[in-house]
Amino acid sequence: MEGNKLEFETALVNKESAGFLQAARELIVSNDQELEIANENLKGTKSLQKKIKEWFYPHKTKARAALNGLIGDEKELLDPLYKTEEIIKNKMVPYMEEQKRKREEAEIAARRAIEEALEATRRAEEEAEAKAIAVEEERQRKAREALHDGEKKKAEKILEEETKVFIPEVEDVPAPAEIIVPEEKKLEGTHMRTTWEWELKNIDLVPRILPGGERPLKLDRAVITGYGVKHKEKATMPGIRFFPTTGVASKE
Image (cartoon, rainbow, N blue to C red; front, side, top):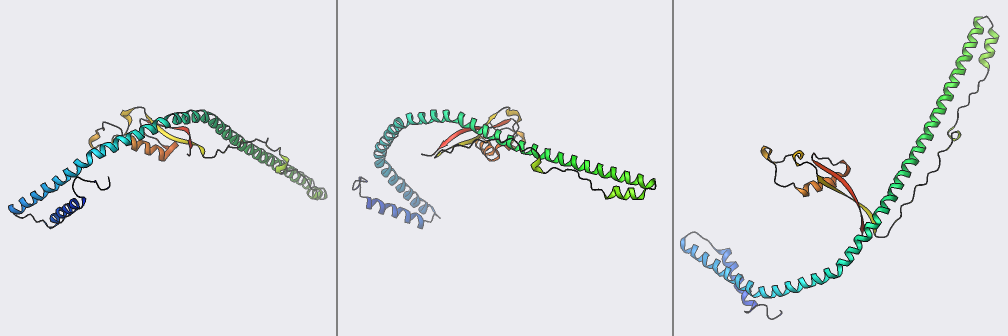
C-alpha cells in the first residue's frame, strides 16, 4: 500500500489532523459562538475519521480474509498433530502414574522398615537396661541380707563382684530388608504435571458474597480455580470439591 495509503495525500491528512488537534488544545468554550466553533471542529474531526476508516475498510477486509485463510491452513495441518499429541500423552500418563505410585510406596516401605529397626533396637536396649537394673538390685538385696546376718565380708565380696549385662548395639539388631526404590525415568522436555480442578457439589452451600445474602447468578470460576491452584490439597470450600488431575507437559 506504499504510495497509495489514502485517496488523498497522506501529508495533507496528517496536516489536517494536526490542525484539529492544535485547535482542540487551544479551544475555550465560554459562550455560544465558541460552542459553535467547537462543534464545527468536532464535525470536521469526525468527517476525517470517517474518510480514513472508509478507505482502510476494504483493505482490512482483504487482509482479514487472508489471515483467516492462513489460520485455517495452519489449523488443518496442526489438528492431526494435536490429536497425535493427546493420544500419546493419554498412553504415557497411566504408566507414569503407576511408576510414581510404586516409587512412593517403596519410599514409605523403606522409611517404615528403618523406623521398625530403630524401634526394635530401642526395645532391646530398654530390655537390657531393665535386666541390668534387676541384676544390680538383686546384688544389693543379697548384700543387705549378708549384712543383716552379720556376714560383712560376704557382703563386701558380693558388692565387689562385677556383673556384666549385655546391652546390644544398633548393629546387633537385624538390619531392615533392603527396599529398592524405582528410579524415576527422566524424559527430555517432558514431565508429569498435576493440575488442581474443582466441581460444584451443592451451590446452596457455597458462601454468599453479595450484601444482604444475595447470591450471584454465576460462580466466579476464575476466582475458585485460582484458589484451588494456590492452595492445592489444602483447598476447601463448602459446596465445592477440589481434586488433582495428572497430565503430561511437553516442550516444543
